[in-house]
Image (cartoon, rainbow, N blue to C red; front, side):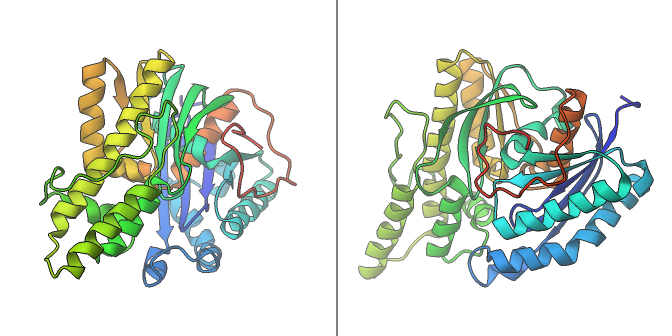
Length: 343
Protein backbone atom coordinates (compact mmCIF):
# COMPACT_ATOMS: atom_id res chain seq x y z
CA UNK A 1 0.00 0.00 0.00
CA UNK A 2 2.84 2.37 -0.86
CA UNK A 3 0.37 4.75 -2.51
CA UNK A 4 -2.04 4.85 0.45
CA UNK A 5 -2.36 8.25 2.15
CA UNK A 6 -0.31 9.11 5.22
CA UNK A 7 -2.66 9.70 8.15
CA UNK A 8 -1.69 11.46 11.37
CA UNK A 9 -3.79 10.37 14.37
CA UNK A 10 -4.22 12.30 17.63
CA UNK A 11 -5.61 10.76 20.83
CA UNK A 12 -6.33 12.78 24.00
CA UNK A 13 -9.45 11.18 25.49
CA UNK A 14 -7.95 10.59 28.94
CA UNK A 15 -4.42 10.93 30.31
CA UNK A 16 -2.24 9.89 27.37
CA UNK A 17 -1.28 12.28 24.59
CA UNK A 18 -0.92 9.84 21.71
CA UNK A 19 0.18 10.58 18.17
CA UNK A 20 0.43 7.93 15.47
CA UNK A 21 1.19 7.90 11.77
CA UNK A 22 0.08 5.14 9.41
CA UNK A 23 0.08 4.42 5.71
CA UNK A 24 -2.80 2.06 5.05
CA UNK A 25 -2.38 -0.62 7.73
CA UNK A 26 1.36 -0.03 8.10
CA UNK A 27 2.39 1.66 11.35
CA UNK A 28 5.12 4.24 10.86
CA UNK A 29 5.13 6.02 14.22
CA UNK A 30 3.45 5.73 17.60
CA UNK A 31 4.51 8.21 20.27
CA UNK A 32 2.89 8.69 23.67
CA UNK A 33 3.32 11.24 26.44
CA UNK A 34 1.55 10.06 29.60
CA UNK A 35 0.56 12.20 32.57
CA UNK A 36 -0.09 9.08 34.69
CA UNK A 37 2.54 9.98 37.26
CA UNK A 38 0.79 13.30 37.89
CA UNK A 39 -2.49 11.48 38.64
CA UNK A 40 -1.06 8.64 40.73
CA UNK A 41 -0.99 10.59 43.98
CA UNK A 42 -4.72 11.27 43.60
CA UNK A 43 -5.54 7.61 42.98
CA UNK A 44 -7.25 8.40 39.69
CA UNK A 45 -7.25 10.69 36.67
CA UNK A 46 -7.90 14.37 37.43
CA UNK A 47 -9.52 15.92 34.30
CA UNK A 48 -8.00 19.39 34.75
CA UNK A 49 -4.52 17.95 35.21
CA UNK A 50 -4.95 15.77 32.13
CA UNK A 51 -6.07 18.71 29.98
CA UNK A 52 -3.09 20.84 30.99
CA UNK A 53 -0.72 17.94 30.34
CA UNK A 54 -2.16 17.49 26.83
CA UNK A 55 -1.59 21.17 26.09
CA UNK A 56 2.03 20.92 27.13
CA UNK A 57 2.70 17.61 25.37
CA UNK A 58 0.89 18.10 22.05
CA UNK A 59 3.52 19.85 19.95
CA UNK A 60 6.54 17.81 21.10
CA UNK A 61 4.61 14.54 20.74
CA UNK A 62 3.57 15.35 17.17
CA UNK A 63 7.12 16.38 16.31
CA UNK A 64 8.45 13.16 17.87
CA UNK A 65 6.07 11.08 15.74
CA UNK A 66 7.19 12.82 12.56
CA UNK A 67 10.83 12.28 13.50
CA UNK A 68 10.18 8.60 14.29
CA UNK A 69 8.59 8.12 10.87
CA UNK A 70 11.21 10.19 9.06
CA UNK A 71 8.54 12.52 7.70
CA UNK A 72 7.78 16.22 7.45
CA UNK A 73 4.49 17.99 8.03
CA UNK A 74 4.13 18.44 4.28
CA UNK A 75 4.04 14.65 3.82
CA UNK A 76 0.81 14.24 5.82
CA UNK A 77 -2.31 13.60 3.69
CA UNK A 78 -5.02 13.58 6.40
CA UNK A 79 -5.47 14.18 10.13
CA UNK A 80 -7.66 12.00 12.38
CA UNK A 81 -8.55 12.80 15.98
CA UNK A 82 -10.56 11.26 18.79
CA UNK A 83 -13.75 13.35 19.00
CA UNK A 84 -15.26 11.22 21.80
CA UNK A 85 -16.08 9.63 24.10
CA UNK A 86 -13.74 10.72 26.88
CA UNK A 87 -13.00 13.58 29.25
CA UNK A 88 -14.47 16.76 27.79
CA UNK A 89 -11.53 19.05 28.46
CA UNK A 90 -8.97 16.50 27.32
CA UNK A 91 -10.88 15.85 24.10
CA UNK A 92 -11.07 19.58 23.39
CA UNK A 93 -7.28 19.87 23.39
CA UNK A 94 -6.88 17.11 20.82
CA UNK A 95 -9.75 18.26 18.61
CA UNK A 96 -8.49 21.86 18.60
CA UNK A 97 -4.97 20.75 17.74
CA UNK A 98 -6.18 18.46 14.95
CA UNK A 99 -8.25 21.26 13.44
CA UNK A 100 -5.22 23.55 13.49
CA UNK A 101 -2.97 20.96 11.85
CA UNK A 102 -5.56 20.06 9.20
CA UNK A 103 -6.26 23.70 8.38
CA UNK A 104 -2.60 24.68 8.36
CA UNK A 105 -1.61 21.74 6.16
CA UNK A 106 -4.65 22.01 3.89
CA UNK A 107 -5.60 18.35 4.41
CA UNK A 108 -8.90 16.67 5.37
CA UNK A 109 -9.89 16.18 9.00
CA UNK A 110 -11.60 13.06 10.39
CA UNK A 111 -13.17 13.10 13.86
CA UNK A 112 -13.43 9.49 15.04
CA UNK A 113 -14.89 7.41 17.85
CA UNK A 114 -12.40 6.32 20.51
CA UNK A 115 -14.00 2.87 20.92
CA UNK A 116 -14.11 2.12 17.19
CA UNK A 117 -10.44 3.12 17.04
CA UNK A 118 -9.63 0.43 19.62
CA UNK A 119 -11.12 -2.05 17.13
CA UNK A 120 -9.36 -0.63 14.07
CA UNK A 121 -5.89 -0.69 15.63
CA UNK A 122 -5.66 -4.48 15.51
CA UNK A 123 -5.29 -4.23 11.73
CA UNK A 124 -1.86 -2.67 12.20
CA UNK A 125 -0.70 -5.99 13.64
CA UNK A 126 -2.94 -8.68 12.17
CA UNK A 127 -4.22 -7.23 8.89
CA UNK A 128 -7.77 -6.47 7.72
CA UNK A 129 -10.59 -7.31 10.12
CA UNK A 130 -12.90 -10.23 9.38
CA UNK A 131 -16.36 -9.01 8.38
CA UNK A 132 -18.19 -9.35 10.66
CA UNK A 133 -16.38 -9.82 13.96
CA UNK A 134 -17.30 -9.50 17.61
CA UNK A 135 -15.22 -6.94 19.51
CA UNK A 136 -14.93 -6.75 23.28
CA UNK A 137 -13.43 -3.50 24.55
CA UNK A 138 -12.31 -3.40 28.17
CA UNK A 139 -10.67 -0.39 29.78
CA UNK A 140 -10.91 1.97 32.72
CA UNK A 141 -13.98 3.65 31.29
CA UNK A 142 -15.56 1.03 29.07
CA UNK A 143 -16.61 -2.61 29.06
CA UNK A 144 -18.41 -3.11 25.76
CA UNK A 145 -19.40 -5.90 23.40
CA UNK A 146 -19.81 -4.90 19.78
CA UNK A 147 -20.87 -6.49 16.53
CA UNK A 148 -18.63 -5.03 13.82
CA UNK A 149 -19.75 -5.65 10.23
CA UNK A 150 -17.46 -2.83 9.01
CA UNK A 151 -15.41 -0.73 11.44
CA UNK A 152 -15.47 2.29 9.12
CA UNK A 153 -19.23 2.31 8.67
CA UNK A 154 -21.19 -0.02 10.88
CA UNK A 155 -20.66 -0.81 14.58
CA UNK A 156 -23.52 -2.23 16.66
CA UNK A 157 -23.60 -2.17 20.47
CA UNK A 158 -24.55 -5.54 21.97
CA UNK A 159 -23.83 -4.85 25.62
CA UNK A 160 -21.96 -2.56 27.99
CA UNK A 161 -21.24 -2.01 31.65
CA UNK A 162 -24.17 -0.98 33.84
CA UNK A 163 -21.85 0.39 36.56
CA UNK A 164 -18.07 0.09 37.04
CA UNK A 165 -16.08 -0.83 33.96
CA UNK A 166 -13.55 -3.65 34.33
CA UNK A 167 -10.54 -1.33 34.42
CA UNK A 168 -12.22 0.90 36.99
CA UNK A 169 -12.80 -2.15 39.21
CA UNK A 170 -9.11 -3.06 38.89
CA UNK A 171 -8.13 0.43 40.07
CA UNK A 172 -10.51 0.36 43.04
CA UNK A 173 -9.54 -3.13 44.16
CA UNK A 174 -5.85 -2.23 43.84
CA UNK A 175 -6.44 0.64 46.24
CA UNK A 176 -8.11 -1.74 48.72
CA UNK A 177 -5.08 -4.03 48.50
CA UNK A 178 -2.60 -1.20 48.91
CA UNK A 179 -1.32 -1.48 45.35
CA UNK A 180 -0.37 1.58 43.24
CA UNK A 181 -2.45 3.33 40.57
CA UNK A 182 -3.17 2.35 37.84
CA UNK A 183 -4.30 -0.92 39.35
CA UNK A 184 -4.43 -3.22 36.33
CA UNK A 185 -0.71 -3.94 35.84
CA UNK A 186 -0.06 -4.23 39.58
CA UNK A 187 -2.92 -6.68 40.16
CA UNK A 188 -1.75 -8.72 37.16
CA UNK A 189 1.76 -8.95 38.61
CA UNK A 190 0.56 -9.72 42.15
CA UNK A 191 -1.83 -12.38 40.86
CA UNK A 192 1.04 -14.30 39.29
CA UNK A 193 2.06 -15.42 42.80
CA UNK A 194 -1.48 -16.22 43.93
CA UNK A 195 -4.31 -18.67 43.32
CA UNK A 196 -7.37 -17.71 41.32
CA UNK A 197 -9.45 -20.17 43.33
CA UNK A 198 -8.33 -19.01 46.79
CA UNK A 199 -11.45 -16.86 47.31
CA UNK A 200 -14.82 -17.38 45.64
CA UNK A 201 -15.84 -13.90 44.53
CA UNK A 202 -19.20 -13.25 42.75
CA UNK A 203 -19.65 -13.11 38.98
CA UNK A 204 -22.06 -10.28 38.20
CA UNK A 205 -24.72 -10.80 35.48
CA UNK A 206 -23.01 -14.01 34.39
CA UNK A 207 -26.19 -15.86 33.40
CA UNK A 208 -28.78 -13.08 33.12
CA UNK A 209 -29.36 -13.53 29.39
CA UNK A 210 -27.92 -10.12 28.49
CA UNK A 211 -24.55 -9.15 27.09
CA UNK A 212 -24.10 -6.40 29.68
CA UNK A 213 -21.46 -6.29 32.42
CA UNK A 214 -21.46 -5.34 36.10
CA UNK A 215 -18.34 -5.14 38.25
CA UNK A 216 -19.48 -2.86 41.07
CA UNK A 217 -20.74 -5.76 43.18
CA UNK A 218 -17.50 -7.66 42.70
CA UNK A 219 -15.46 -4.62 43.74
CA UNK A 220 -17.60 -4.24 46.86
CA UNK A 221 -17.33 -7.95 47.66
CA UNK A 222 -13.52 -7.76 47.60
CA UNK A 223 -13.54 -4.67 49.83
CA UNK A 224 -15.91 -6.31 52.35
CA UNK A 225 -13.87 -9.54 52.36
CA UNK A 226 -10.67 -7.62 53.10
CA UNK A 227 -12.36 -5.49 55.76
CA UNK A 228 -13.73 -8.57 57.54
CA UNK A 229 -10.31 -10.27 57.66
CA UNK A 230 -8.61 -7.12 58.89
CA UNK A 231 -11.27 -6.63 61.58
CA UNK A 232 -10.65 -10.20 62.74
CA UNK A 233 -6.92 -9.56 62.92
CA UNK A 234 -6.17 -11.99 60.09
CA UNK A 235 -3.42 -11.41 57.57
CA UNK A 236 -4.31 -10.75 53.95
CA UNK A 237 -2.42 -12.68 51.30
CA UNK A 238 -2.55 -10.04 48.57
CA UNK A 239 -1.53 -12.33 45.68
CA UNK A 240 -4.43 -14.72 46.41
CA UNK A 241 -6.98 -11.90 46.64
CA UNK A 242 -5.62 -10.27 43.48
CA UNK A 243 -5.68 -13.56 41.58
CA UNK A 244 -9.20 -14.45 42.76
CA UNK A 245 -10.54 -11.00 41.86
CA UNK A 246 -8.81 -11.10 38.48
CA UNK A 247 -10.21 -14.57 37.78
CA UNK A 248 -13.75 -13.36 38.51
CA UNK A 249 -13.37 -10.46 36.06
CA UNK A 250 -11.85 -12.44 33.19
CA UNK A 251 -14.31 -15.31 33.71
CA UNK A 252 -17.24 -12.94 33.14
CA UNK A 253 -15.58 -11.12 30.25
CA UNK A 254 -14.69 -14.25 28.30
CA UNK A 255 -18.02 -15.98 28.95
CA UNK A 256 -19.99 -12.97 27.73
CA UNK A 257 -17.76 -12.56 24.68
CA UNK A 258 -18.27 -16.16 23.62
CA UNK A 259 -21.99 -15.90 24.31
CA UNK A 260 -22.04 -13.01 21.82
CA UNK A 261 -20.11 -15.03 19.23
CA UNK A 262 -22.55 -17.92 19.56
CA UNK A 263 -25.67 -15.75 19.57
CA UNK A 264 -24.68 -13.91 16.39
CA UNK A 265 -22.95 -16.88 14.71
CA UNK A 266 -19.64 -15.01 14.43
CA UNK A 267 -16.37 -16.93 14.55
CA UNK A 268 -13.87 -14.10 15.06
CA UNK A 269 -13.38 -12.32 18.39
CA UNK A 270 -11.26 -9.21 18.87
CA UNK A 271 -10.34 -7.95 22.34
CA UNK A 272 -9.06 -4.39 22.76
CA UNK A 273 -8.64 -1.64 25.34
CA UNK A 274 -6.22 -1.31 28.23
CA UNK A 275 -7.45 -4.37 30.15
CA UNK A 276 -6.73 -6.48 27.06
CA UNK A 277 -3.08 -6.25 28.14
CA UNK A 278 -3.94 -8.42 31.18
CA UNK A 279 -2.06 -11.72 30.92
CA UNK A 280 -4.81 -13.86 32.45
CA UNK A 281 -7.51 -12.39 30.21
CA UNK A 282 -5.43 -13.15 27.13
CA UNK A 283 -4.71 -16.71 28.29
CA UNK A 284 -8.28 -17.60 29.29
CA UNK A 285 -9.73 -16.00 26.16
CA UNK A 286 -7.39 -18.08 23.99
CA UNK A 287 -8.26 -21.26 25.90
CA UNK A 288 -12.02 -20.73 25.60
CA UNK A 289 -11.88 -19.55 21.99
CA UNK A 290 -9.89 -22.64 21.00
CA UNK A 291 -12.50 -24.86 22.68
CA UNK A 292 -15.36 -23.03 20.91
CA UNK A 293 -13.76 -22.89 17.46
CA UNK A 294 -13.51 -19.08 17.56
CA UNK A 295 -10.50 -17.24 16.14
CA UNK A 296 -9.06 -14.74 18.65
CA UNK A 297 -7.28 -11.49 17.82
CA UNK A 298 -5.66 -9.36 20.52
CA UNK A 299 -3.21 -6.55 19.68
CA UNK A 300 0.12 -6.45 21.45
CA UNK A 301 -0.11 -4.65 24.82
CA UNK A 302 1.34 -1.39 23.49
CA UNK A 303 -1.56 -1.09 21.05
CA UNK A 304 -4.22 -2.01 23.64
CA UNK A 305 -3.79 1.06 25.81
CA UNK A 306 -4.82 4.48 24.45
CA UNK A 307 -2.56 5.61 21.60
CA UNK A 308 -2.50 7.72 18.47
CA UNK A 309 -1.88 4.76 16.18
CA UNK A 310 -5.41 3.48 16.74
CA UNK A 311 -6.87 6.84 15.72
CA UNK A 312 -4.69 6.98 12.63
CA UNK A 313 -5.71 3.41 11.76
CA UNK A 314 -9.42 4.24 11.87
CA UNK A 315 -8.78 7.46 9.97
CA UNK A 316 -7.03 5.45 7.28
CA UNK A 317 -10.05 3.13 7.03
CA UNK A 318 -12.35 6.13 6.62
CA UNK A 319 -10.18 7.54 3.85
CA UNK A 320 -10.07 4.16 2.08
CA UNK A 321 -13.87 3.84 2.35
CA UNK A 322 -14.38 7.23 0.74
CA UNK A 323 -16.08 8.69 3.81
CA UNK A 324 -16.65 12.45 3.65
CA UNK A 325 -14.19 14.32 5.88
CA UNK A 326 -15.40 16.09 9.01
CA UNK A 327 -16.18 19.79 9.07
CA UNK A 328 -13.77 22.06 10.92
CA UNK A 329 -16.67 22.90 13.24
CA UNK A 330 -16.88 19.38 14.73
CA UNK A 331 -17.34 19.37 18.50
CA UNK A 332 -15.68 17.23 21.14
CA UNK A 333 -18.41 14.90 22.43
CA UNK A 334 -17.66 13.29 25.79
CA UNK A 335 -20.61 10.89 25.42
CA UNK A 336 -20.27 10.05 21.73
CA UNK A 337 -22.15 6.75 21.17
CA UNK A 338 -20.26 3.81 19.72
CA UNK A 339 -22.70 3.66 16.80
CA UNK A 340 -21.26 7.01 15.61
CA UNK A 341 -17.91 5.96 14.13
CA UNK A 342 -17.21 9.29 12.43
CA UNK A 343 -18.42 12.82 13.16
